[in-house]
Length: 262
Image (cartoon, rainbow, N blue to C red; front, side):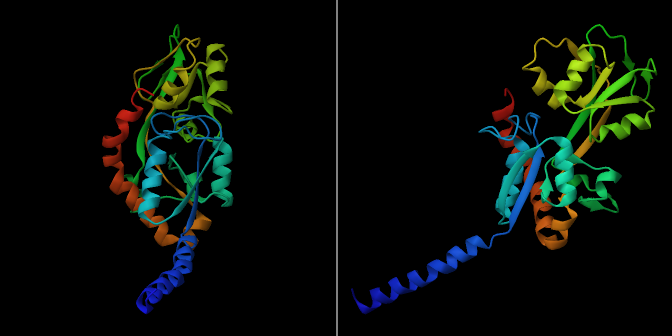
C-alpha cells in the first residue's frame, strides 16, 4: 500500500470513533401514548404498536428525525400516562388536550398564554354514545333529561367539559368498561372521542349503541413535555413542536389512505 493509501486508511480509522460518539450523543426522547387504539392516530392495543402504528406516531417519528432525536415510544393506560409525564419518567406524551390541571405539570406550546393550535398534532371531537333505544337528547348546551348520568374515563379532559355543563359524570378505567356499563343501562351515555369509539366498536358488533348527532366538544391535541425535560432541553422541545406544525398536514395527505379502512 502506498504512503498516500496508508494515510487515507488511517484517517478513516481515526474518524470512526468520532462518528460513533456523535451518534451516541443524540438526545434521547421517550414519548408515551395511550394503550388503546384511536384510529387513524394510534393503532394497536396494549403495550405494543401495530406495524402501521398510526398517524400520531408517524408524525412524532418524523419530527424526531428532523430534530436529530433518538426516539423511544411507550404505551400506557391513560392515568398512568399522565403520572409518567408528571413524574418525568416520560419526556413527552402523544395526543393530549390542554387543560389547566395538566398545565401544572406539562409544558404545552403557547401563544399569548393560550395553547397554540398551530402546533397541534390533531383536532379531535368528543361525542355522546347512547343505547339504540335511548330517548336522550343533547342540543349542544343541554342534556335532556338533565338527571342523566354520562360515563367517561378517569383522567380524560372531557370530564371538565361535562362538569361545566352541570352534567352528572361517572368514571371508569377503560373504553370497554364504559361501553359495557352503557349497554347494561348503568349509565345513560358515554362521552368519548368519535375516532376512538369507531375503532373500538368495529370489533364489538354485540354492542347496540349509537352516537348522538350533535358533538359534545372539539379539542386540539398536542405533544406536551414534562417540565423536567423542557427545563433540560428547551430548544429541542421547540424543534419538535415546530416540526409537528410543519409536517402535520403533508403527512395526513400522504398517509391517511393507509389507515382509512383500518
